[in-house]
Each structure stands twice: as C-alpha cells, then as structure tokens.
Image (cartoon, rainbow, N blue to C red):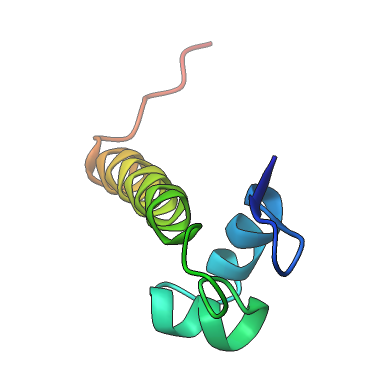
Length: 76
C-alpha cells in the first residue's frame, strides 16, 4: 500500500529500508523522502516503523529463547 503519495513510497519500501538500517523517521526521510513534503504520511509511516520494531523484538525474543533452551538429547 502507498504510504507516501508525494514520493510514491510503499509500506514494503519502508520495511525494506528498516531492514537496511533506517529505523527512525529522520533516516526514512533521508532514504526515501517520507514525510518530506506535505507530511500527511508521517503517522502511517511511524506505524509501519513501529510494526517493524515489534516484529524485530519478537524475533529477537524467540532467538534468545531458542539459544537458552537446553539441548535436546538424541534418542536412538
């Protein structure tokens, strides 16, 4: 879905930029131009960033849990 109509930026592009390190509105603006014109897209872009952060936190928590789990003994 288009988030920023002025610069034709989609939510997928924002997610990709987040994965590449654009984890703030300032960095998104620099990379994609989001919220650089009229600013109407800022709330939606923030929501997409928040979703990305929450997903990363969930993935990190799952990975940490898997790392701390005791090894499973192999049975023959």
